[in-house]
Image (cartoon, rainbow, N blue to C red; front, side, top):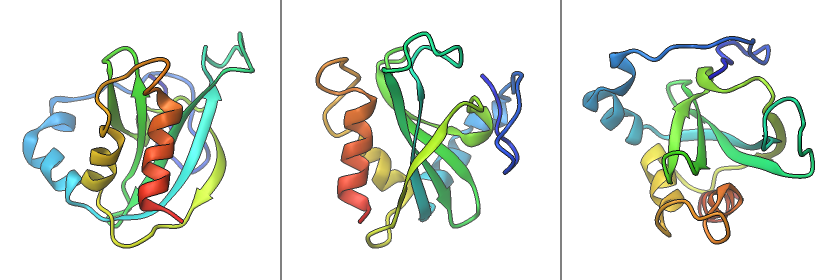
Length: 140
């Protein structure tokens, strides 16, 4: 995957995960971290080449109280709604709407909403549905 480890929008090239990226204490801490801001982001579904520019892949890019940045989205690869560090995002994601938090939601709250209707389904529970569930429950 690509990388957006800086606020300048990222760069090309892979960022390889380490075993520390996925340890249980770190994930537990992440799920309990408050979300301070978010935005809806999108990119061409079939990559940066724009093979099908009319089909958009969407996600919710969140910033947490400890200044962590993450992307929540649905993927058919793992048949689930997932969260990944923003540094693992390709640089072709573009912001489309800033979201104003409603209340004090945590990352875990957002993930619970994202996963509400089960795993990925192209027609009934895709990335667009995931964005809508998170946006409608946790943001103005």
